[in-house]
Length: 223
Image 1 (tube, rainbow, N blue to C red):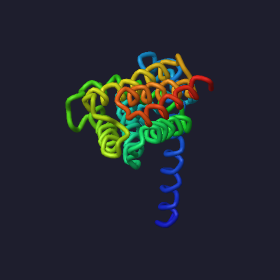
Image 2 (image 1 turned 30 degrees about the vertical axis):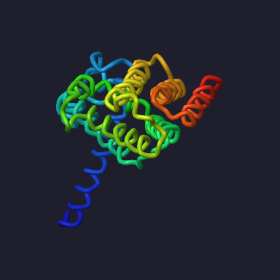
Image 3 (image 1 turned 60 degrees about the horizontal axis):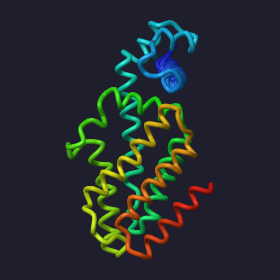
């Protein structure tokens, strides 16, 4: 076989290996999402994928390597949401961000459930004080939204911004935990998180904004 033929053969083998790895990783995501990260094993993955356990180790390394891969992909996806525009209007802001996140999750529920389980295992949400931490980056988006809302007169500034940030983040955190745990579906997740965020904003809203926030909350309750 000439060099050109060997090169084409190597490219084909690498492409097939990549496709097989992606297929098996999708199976891993489903297993983790449905059974939990602690119950997930490479032997189980090998059985479901129809390959040997050594093949799984050859493709992925260790279980911790899959965990790291899931977390890295999760951070990349959520960072794209964080890069979206800032809105001053709390109704528009909350609705836009929640709907963006729900749309992201709907694209691959197995992956995001599995990735959040992995993120919890590595303590991604534990370091709330680190400027580079996931929690602080999430709250920075809320801080910018609150600042814009205050500047444009939607908020009054009677409640400390840091208090609003904690409550807004907790709306997402609690809803996310219930969804990852399988207690609610994405429709309920959306309504709960959005309702909670709107209620937080309403606590410091100007009279006109307060009326709009309450109206939106009532609409959510009758859906």
